[in-house]
Amino acid sequence: MYVKNHMLRREKLVTLDLQDNIYTALKKIQEGDFMSLPVLEGDEFKGYLMKEAIYRNYFEYNQGDKNEFLKNTKVKDLYSTNFKSIKEDDYIENASYLLKEWRTPFLPVFDSQNKFTGILTHSSIFDAFSEIFGLDKGTRIVVNMLDIPGQLAKLTEVIRKENVNIINFAAVDAKVLDVYRVIIRVDTKDVIGLIEKIEKAGFKIGEISR
Image (cartoon, rainbow, N blue to C red; front, side, top):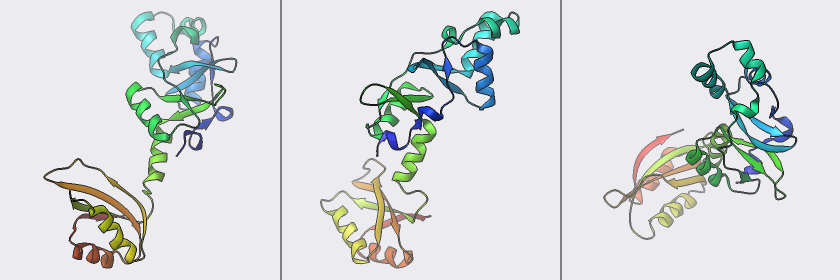
């Protein structure tokens, strides 16, 4: 799954210019109920400005006339350049890692010519992984599986014989006492019948949910 399929496109973004004053910036932030906004110089991405940075700077460092602060302070004075970027054709998993490691509000996205084309937010990442794991589809079955070669193939063969579609599966826990915890999401109307077949094959079911 690629970044370009989940990013917010440049043309749909509310952005700030380096030369905007903080009054203009704060107005845009408040009107859109944003926590931060991308900062541009022309079409070039420069960084981002967080709402928190505006308030912190005023209350911790200025504490003078508010109107003067809003009018005379520029975006260029407060914006952050502490970011990592990502390409449109990168995998969404890489974007998730970068957002976690850098703790930025979003990742700027660039095309193969290094042109700024949009941003990828935490919400976009969540939506992408929800789609990957099919969280709104099928039935979730947790299977406790012994660490023995061929166990996963055996489990999937049981499900295949029941003509049931596997939406996705993942090993979510590290091995404990030679047992893996595997989550499978399946598309079937006869969940009870499938569970019986899985247990009959020697597997232990830990949990079932929608």
